Length: 124
Image 1: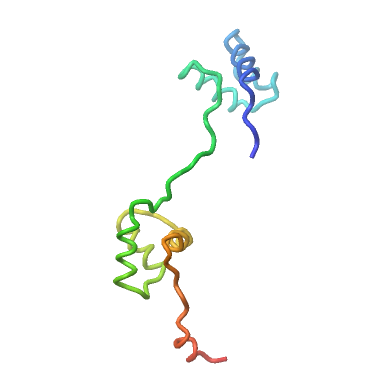
Image 2: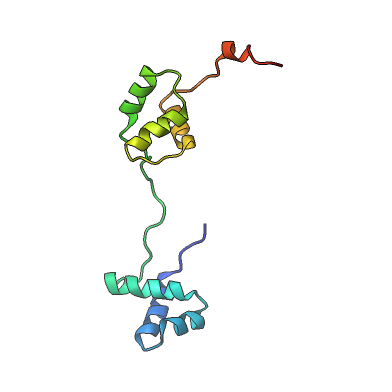
């Protein structure tokens, strides 16, 4: 991941724009994208600050708060698939991928095993 531009550089770009240079001209002069100069200027006018926004950090899982209902659902239907859980969540307006559901259930200590008896009936 690339680093944010320093505050001194941001300040020079914003001061050039404030002194009368257009945002596009300042972007060409400082070799940055016009959208960068426009964004910096917008942020400066809103917050009166040159500094960059905080990057990264922790984000709660999408399914945070649904642990109990998912555990109950799996307990009531032990052979339920991730696809069926996905459809159940879709009815509650929660759009999430099957992989996300699988990882979430794994963190809760639930894993799905293949049924060995069912696999014996298949042809070789």
